[in-house]
Length: 481
Image 1 (cartoon, rainbow, N blue to C red):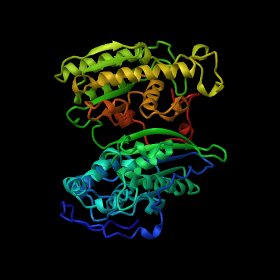
Image 2 (cartoon, rainbow, N blue to C red):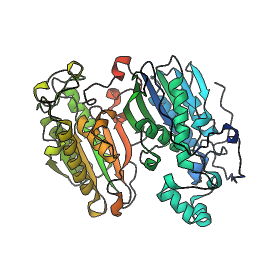
Image 3 (cartoon, helix red, strand yellow):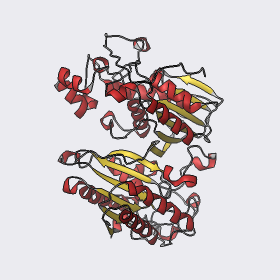
Image 4 (tube, rainbow, N blue to C red):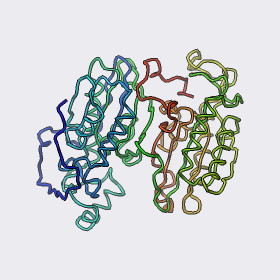
């Protein structure tokens, strides 16, 4: 890859006026059409999506869209360098990136001296926002009034200049998947692009419609990872390894009137090994599990936790008590810790203690029925939402198991029990669901997924982005439980 041009990284006062056409017109990819299905693949593939670092227009609060006048600020360069350090030991066979300079700069910093093919995909450019591009947010409100309100409140239905930006973006994201998954001979790909288009890539991989725009947060410099497995001649199966692992803290500063649920997966238990159906066996934490739990509790010293709910199993309660203890050490009031049976792990019955790879997918009669487990996750989700919405917004910590975290994520994203295997979480990881503006009753079910399977706080025990091929597979009948 060519060296990056020498560009001043001071925030510029560039303005931009949409003229009705630009360099992307000839591509004929601005289509208000249903997304294309994911292409079939012949071998497992892992894709890491990275959003560019902070740009000059990010810093100014301008609407960037697919305009190409902004570039990385010094903070943005630092974010890209931090992400590059987080990924320095990860192996990628190919780089795909947006043609816009802020993404190109980020890609060059992260890719570094790696060898491998590089493809610049116009389909990875940021959402086309036409006449909105270049406007400060206050300018957009003043100039476009109801249209700007529509953009904020109903982006999937928003139209401007006779175009439908988000519906077009979903189609364009599905076009990008044709190239990313269609490239032959690669096992691991790095994709560097933008906030909105990375959301479109995640959502189209999950099969979610444009109404889910802004429901999967993408921070500057953050990494999201998806595993794809062959599925005959049909679209591949998917596992979301993580969403929005940012260079900084996953918590940030919540807006006034916001609530959030912090889901902590229990650490490794005594006798645990990858793929073991531990179920409701009440094993205590192993030495590694206690380290994972302590690291999670230490990370949560950054925020005031109002309430803690825990699975009734010993390994969960140990970590819940650690979080409560360290809250006091951080200078906050010690939160209450409550056991909740609905947060218990899936009961595998006679299959408990078996390896998931040895168990038939038809486990009826042996394990807790999927429908019963799904209903239990629904009750837990309703309870936790209500707790997060109390008193104008609370931070609620939950210590539970991978199966329950997956169930709660699926409930938040309005999926069904067939989707329980979509989300992977590791021991001691953090998954964060936020509720901006909890005072509005219609936001009760519309949690924003701020991150899943965040593990950077685990240090040497953090899960790498690229792993051995054998570890790419979904590891249980219903997911990585």
